[in-house]
Image (tube, rainbow, N blue to C red; front, side, top):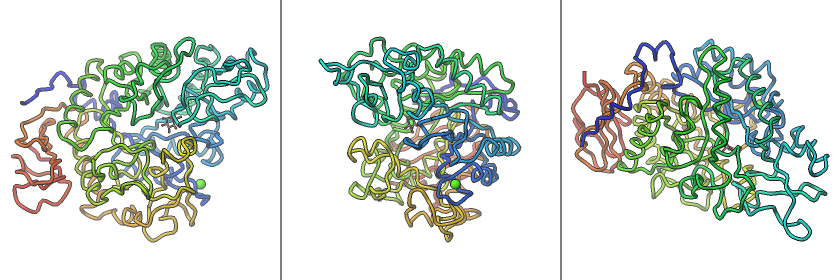
Length: 560
Ligand code: GLC
Ligand code: CA
């Protein structure tokens, strides 16, 4: 059946896309995980000067914007998602001047800059929380967080049964105290009380602080979590992250997706709209179904939300097609663009997920004792998947290293692990360190060129040498050159602002679609199939037999 999806057309013309009207509708946004991107000063941790030095690489890749995970002052209990001061750059990453240089240079190269905003919780080392600990129960200082008396005759039982996303109890006792405080994540990440006007005022001010410094947008961390159900009622479920959002009923829980969050985003939207240029917000919200997620991107709220359903899809043509259709339909219903994302700093890299026996399975980390992915097959599928993802109308996210075909570090020794989820589950959850390993830039240099010396905050596997940028740069057929070519064609064919039209594929393992004059085909099966009509533009693998598309391969053709 050919499904004409004209109703998903986005309102702009090609010209507007080029001149940048509502740039976020079709933007390719590259996620930088600062501590693992490039280290300029050799302490083994990536930093802002390291990013600045590599901006020409990103401009050449052909992306439209960068999104930086947090670089604010933080004790780094959750790799910077525990913010102690929202207006200060952590000395690990540099200074505010370094940020300004980086931002300026990115803009000079034509790239927008999105920063991370972490409003659900602060660090326990934030001045507010420190003041709260020093103040008695019932004090004004405590009212900015969620302090409660414990249950039981001595108050030594937690106020309710909520579990932390990272495992264990979501409540910790304030040291030497009768009260408990809520932390949906680590105990060093106390949840803020978003019913408090000071909390709201403070974050508006933080938004202004970064808007005044020229940022083009915010990625809003845990956007579905700010408001909790009144009375903090017990709940039978387990608060899960990306991998479990749909399965754990995040949308019926008392901590996620409460109606009250939307008012906050409407307010922020009005604030952003008072600034010149098109400042945007993208929601990180692990909720299902798509229609609930779309409520975050209604016309007066955020511009985008991460499409985790797409990230979670297995390597299965019918499943992927269904996710693409439901995503396009849900965002079109509210006039927002759809986003496409395969990897981020919280999930196993898709090159590795696609190489598992159940391709696209969602382990929470992989270690040496777990099933080791078929690296070559995973890479082959990831390259094919890039031809689907980057051809879809909407905005696409690339996680640093994805353009190199970088795999997960799947044998990282436990002694190096830093993810709080690993510790809070006593290792039952391997955690996210494996997708956060510093990037390889030079195959033959110490730390593979991540920094000037040997140091790297997580050890890199030897296999990273063959993925290094200098091994791929200018090498025809490399994953890096493939991404460069795809991003160029995506622009030439205005795929981000186009519309998708499925064509009949002739095999249940194959998807064929048109976007304007470009025809895409992806073969998710193992057997070769006939290549559809059209002139070949690019294929994810060399096509050895004329007219044939091998298994786990995709191609772009042109109809004109
Ligand atoms: C988001 C971040 C994740 C972090 C969590 C708590 O999900 O992406 O890395 O651990 O929020 O801030
Ligand atoms: Ca450094």
